[in-house]
Each structure stands twice: as C-alpha cells, then as structure tokens.
Image: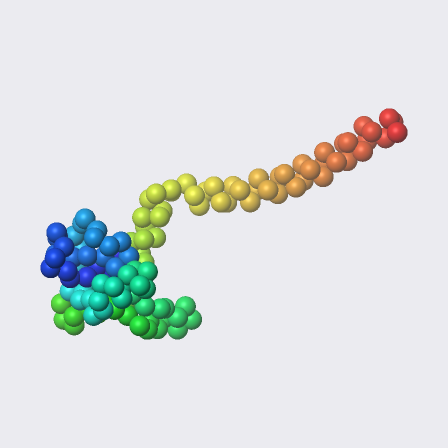
Length: 132
C-alpha cells in the first residue's frame, strides 16, 4: 500500500514497486500524497521491488527510490504509516476474528493434553504391572 508511484504510462496513472503493472488505482493517494519514482525501472526491478531498507530498531529508511512530493497529501508520512499499520491490523482481524479466542483456547488444550498424557502414563503402568 505504500509502494504506489505516479507512472503516466500505466493504465490508471500509477504503478506499484512491489507488484509491477498492478491493475488498480492508488486509492490512498489523497492521504499519502503524490509519490514519484526517482530510480529507473531496471534499478527498481533489480532491487526486487523493494524501495529501500528499514532499520528495525530506529525506523530509519535508507536507499529509497520512491519519494512523496511535499504538500500533496493530507497526512504526514508518520501519520500515513500509522494509518496503514492500523488498517492492516484491522484487515487481519476481519479475516479471522476467532483467532484470538482460538489462541487462548489453544493454551488450555495444550495444558489439558499434558495432564492427560501424565494420567494415561500412570494408568498404563498400573495395567501393565500385573502382566510383567
């Protein structure tokens, strides 16, 4: 969602750095602003569609090909990143709303199986005691 850029040769006037020749418009351009590609298409493809590196500890990006033109969006880059983060989390939740409940129940199931395994082992020892 962050890698759309202005491309006048594309059908909808935008392209995507991760999924080249995407067949959809950039519906979030009003929020993000107009993004221009400062690299050649070959350089963008050589990078594998990635637009730079992100340091996970500091959050600093380096080596980007895509630049947002200042003053064209209604959000700052930090606000846009937070909005995309929130939207992605919401879409993940909507995709499988029972996941949180399943993870909570999964913990109890594993505890039950551990206790049941111990009880089954003691029962097996008791049954096989007379046979040996």
